[in-house]
Image (tube, rainbow, N blue to C red; front, top):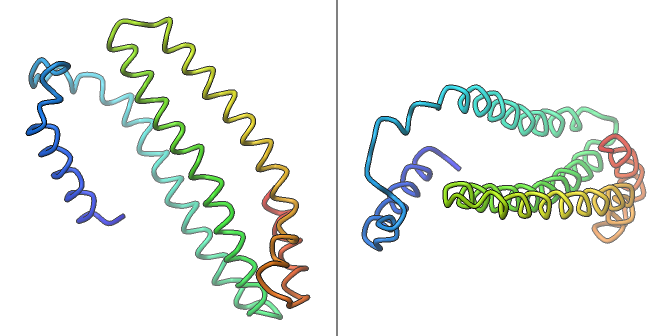
Length: 166
């Protein structure tokens, strides 16, 4: 998502919140005290964002490097499937984490600490089950590649990449 898309999305989001009136029940007004504890947050957020960006750039570099192997067509194709499957594996936990973080924040803000603890552990259990499912799916990446193509060299690359990804 580019900077223009993010700023447009934020602008639309603020207009929606302001004109729908959903902020009136929970927001007491703007205060500079809200920026008081941002430094610890930024100390975590900035390195995390940099690591995610570097990880995706690494996938792009790996795809370019796959083009220099002995069979570039099959290696790039299998790397593309690997990237799609790993991005699919990221989407669910990321969305679940955002949802639970919002819910926990709402529970803490509403002074209901007993309820946020339940949400936290429910998310951890679901994440654990999802990790087990993904760990079972990744080794079968070569089986998934059989549905994409009938090229035998592609299977060997997919098998190798699935073992490296684990």
